[in-house]
Image 1: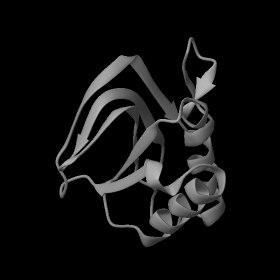
Image 2: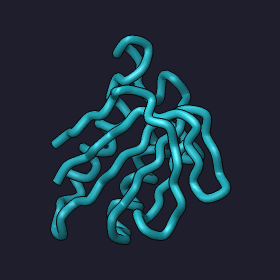
Image 3: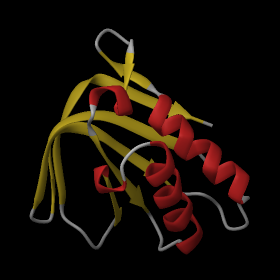
Length: 115
């Protein structure tokens, strides 16, 4: 199970749009520990992807869209808690892979695969 993060611009989720941010594809296997999910969400916030690899999502003030393959209440709750306590909950959007319309321009090449 991995967290795949892409740096993106012109992100549109359904009718909501963001200028810049990250798209994170996360599909934990059933039985993943809460500690593991929390660790991956913190990595998402700390990953230095902007300003020549010196600044992270929080430092840039950007948004993040987490794409889940399947509904997962544990991931949803942990992600919201991490963003609320370490950043801003309004900068987070969590969607299901096949139930929301997501379009964006990859701002890269810049894709990270984290375990």
